[in-house]
Image (cartoon, rainbow, N blue to C red; front, side, top):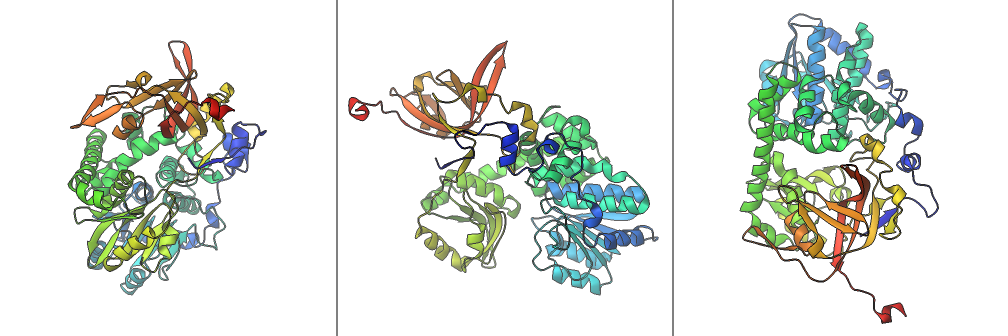
Amino acid sequence: MNIKELYDKNEQINIETYLSKCGVKDIEEYLNPSGKYLDDCMLYNNIRDGVQEIKYHCLTENNKIFIIQDGDCDGVCCTVMLYQYLRALKEDLDISILIHTSKQRGLDDEDIMNRIREEKPNLVIIPDAGTNNKIQAKELCDLGIGLLVIDHHDIATPIEHGTLINNQDPKSNVSKNGSGALVTHKFLQALDKEFNLEWSSWFIDLVALSLISDSMDMSEMENREYYHYGLETIECVNNEFLKHLIDSFIGNEYTQKDLSFKVIPKINSICRHKNIEYKQRLIMAFIGQDNLDEVLDIVSQAHKDQIDTVNNIIELNVDKIEKIKDNNLIVFASDDIPRSYSGLVCAKIMNICNNKPTIVGSIKDGELIGSLRSPIPLRSDLDNNDLVEWASGHEDSCGILIKENNIGSLVDYYNSLTLSYSPCISVLKSYTIKSLPTKLFGLFEPYNALWNGKGLQKPMFHISNITFNPSDVQIMGKTKRVIKIHSNGIDFMIFNCLKEDKEKLGLGYYEDGCFISSPKKEKMQLECVGELGINEWNGNKKLQVIIDKYEVICYNKKSKKDIF
């Protein structure tokens, strides 16, 4: 394991020092938010022009407005906020929501452009997209159609016609780490100021949800404030459908990780689904105009459809994947993959191919367009490679376009390199099992609400020299997907274990899909990265490590030769 320790030998480990190491500047404010780090909405460049657009188009009779919804959870949150606010501002406003039928953004969708050309609305609003739709913005201007873009994505070829409000604008002295919904909320705050209202406070829960769904940096003070006031407890939640989702899929007590794994994927599964009615009903539920239980069933079905679709794609292409798994860069193209599912399929194939950088997409007109998932930072390297047209997004997760004729050369290029696929894992400290201080167990449990996938990771420790007998390992749970290894007075837990986990740990093997228990007789040794907690059951407390990552080897007992 490639381990990086955050703490030096004599440093004290506690919540204050850990937050400081994560980049949090004001520890007391982070733990007990007061709202003082919420940026003033009027610091956003062009926000006054956007307000004037709304005043003109909302308060003028018979004006038609289109909102283009971006196809993810952040886009849903933005659209719901804008729609409900503008409806409250003018009840009979002629306003329509346009939804992408495929994985396209802003005005890149030709179907949406055609509808705009045909119906000629007075104003088009694009939240969470549209910043770089320069050519299409010019066309809207020529048609006499107003354009308001409220976004948080990088600025490359910005629109020159219409109004652009974007937190990445260097003229705006604001946080660059906000989601599309956060920037949209700032715009609603500006409308509050203009009309002497306080309606923007209705939507803080949706902003908080968007920050988690879009993997925003939650060590950022403003993001922390939004989450604290909008979503930290179920009592903060205003939106009835969001409350319904949390109650149904998690319960009243939850963490940011629970939202990331149990609620947000359900919403995104609707956004990816080919059924346009599903997408429409999701929006209707969020704005309070549909049966919440019925839409909840639709959400569950869409998520099931998503899992089935991805699994079917993998099963149909097992042989093809097997042929390419030895490459340093895995590139898989198939017409069977809907573009909206390319990222999910990519993550699945990456796991099959021993966690190597993976590109998945379909080929159209001689080009592969799809997604990259990588255990190591790779986007910039690919984007600067002459064999790649572009790679845009995060370093380990992005969209990508490659000419079909260049795929073979790109794979050959990476096969010529020596790559390490082991990302550097940051832990607080590294210990052997015998040197691990018991006082660290449960130390961070009171702060579980703070941890997330970006910016403020759950505190993890590296533990080595864990020896065990495979015959003593317990396989637990109704689905037999929980493993407990007891060693040195500590329970080491692996949840949602896969087939390969059982095999790597020497517990047995699979034959015709069935697990055959056949524990190895020799001792084995484990090193892991995990969370230190205390499990209490019927008044008994046990030290517990919830394993996040691990490596296992056969145990070689030291001989006299090793010692002397």
